[in-house]
Image (cartoon, rainbow, N blue to C red; front, side, top):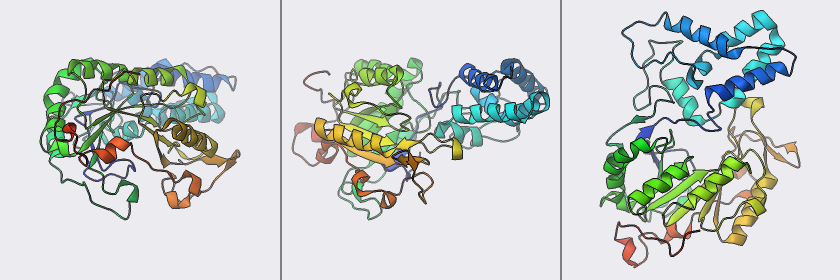
Length: 389
């Protein structure tokens, strides 16, 4: 739990479940190995990255004490990351610096999830087996782990309704907004439904939890839809959300699946946005909120974020009556294909932006919550939409 967060669109974060089974920001080991092999092949070099990493993993495990627990002698993305430097050394010795550089770039470009990278830096490592994971982290990012009681503690945090903060004026007078699952994906497995029903749901609907808005993000909205159906619909103070990264089939399917979630508020996090999403492909019927932003990234490898994409999204949201929120411009914003230099390395300081992009809106339901006299303002039961879209 983080009582205070730098994430611009919420006040607090909570992770009743940490870790994730993977996505385009934290791809499978097979996808990372394919990227390595393709990068080397483009230079005319053939690398059997799978067998090389297997040998490196076996060598590491031969030195790990038998008493150590939680480590996996497996070819997974976490172990690839921790052994990347040893792998690059091997490629340098056997195939030269050009192939080694291509392999290193492929790994860094493939693994970009900030939650995963935090786990890679703060949880277990087979390269450094004596390092103890930071409290509250999953042992490794792939090991989806439950943390009972966090949501109940978060629910008891002070009410923010009516308060103002000059440093975050866009959030003034709104209830506390709690981002659920910034350090993983609680819907990685349907096997965790029972835990979520027993641990998270009661916290959200308790007297204390009902004061706040809970912003629940997943990259598996098909699981979220199944969960919501099992509980008779999400409570009215929960915003069901999913992530898009571009106009690809996987992202657009998430949008369709999110619309099947029985919830009174739905939102999209289009961040990091890797490519333009044409408005014709982005049907916002049934969507209340769109967050957009560029990739934080890793230096020169960061994907560009064209301001034209953000402005087009802004206009599309205005036409559809959807609240629009620009989170950050990322490390590599562009305008007319030319780079824009910003002091904030994540591009999150909107004082540096052109005024047309200083848009940080929240759904009308957020502003109306606990301010109106409708029955649901004091009733934690779900409010069902009149139609599904």
